[in-house]
Length: 77
Image 1 (cartoon, rainbow, N blue to C red):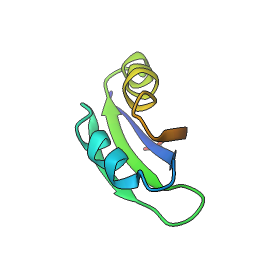
Image 2: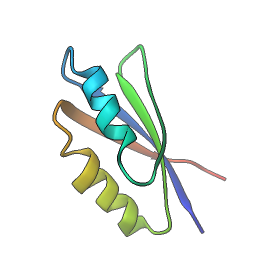
Image 3: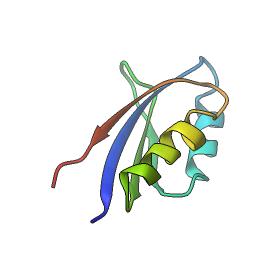
Image 4: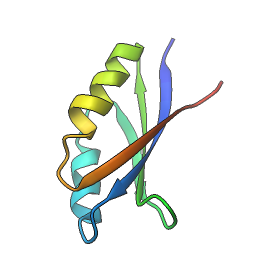
């Protein structure tokens, strides 16, 4: 079974484009776009295991310069 998540991301001011470009290069990220509202960017991602998703968020995504916080939501269905 493939796990699918929506990751809501807060970014340092004026670094949105840089962050979005970096996110697009991360393996397992299937989609990413700017947002207007309490979050600046979102990313959709897929993985085969929860451990793979943990690695994606903790080791790949949260190490991108300019990201200040993430909220991960599992997609039902």
